[in-house]
Image (cartoon, rainbow over all chains, first blue to last red; front, side):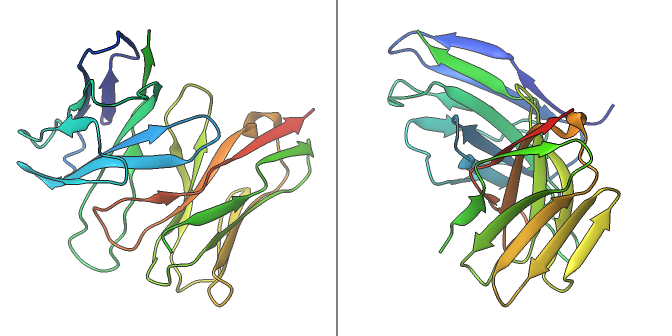
Length: 117
Length: 112
């Protein structure tokens, strides 16, 4: 089965704690992304990575960190500096098309719901 | 310029009716416009997508209409069914491997 897995499904964090959300894909996609979803809002980009050992900040990167040591894995750490981390976190991946037309078809995982206690 | 504005915020349609959701964008560099369907507690799933070189794309009961001059695109769901009840997001991007810019979503309820 090809796809994107995220774990855990539910995560609870105490004030001042760092927590790490896992994202793995076996689609052989080059690019991976982390989005945050809040009620009544669209998805907002936190970080993305087009290649191993390289990643770029999105619109709301403050208080988050990522790593990309393997092509199939892109974990997200929510640090204590993130003041309002309660949200639904979505990981996605896409291929970097080899030729025109270039598309950005992103496939999403099932999400992790993070709640701050 | 990076925003995608989506309307309406919520929509109630009778079974068998047509659901229409609209999106507008400003950035003329956008060249990929997907629609995603999301059920509660699940990740979004790609429904249908269009590029600006065509004005319409149809897949089953789902159709995207694209108006390049007006910088607008819309999703039409024909013969809407209760199983279509979900949140729908439009999005746009201009380069592979970069962010999709999402609208804020439309919650569709199809009454039986």
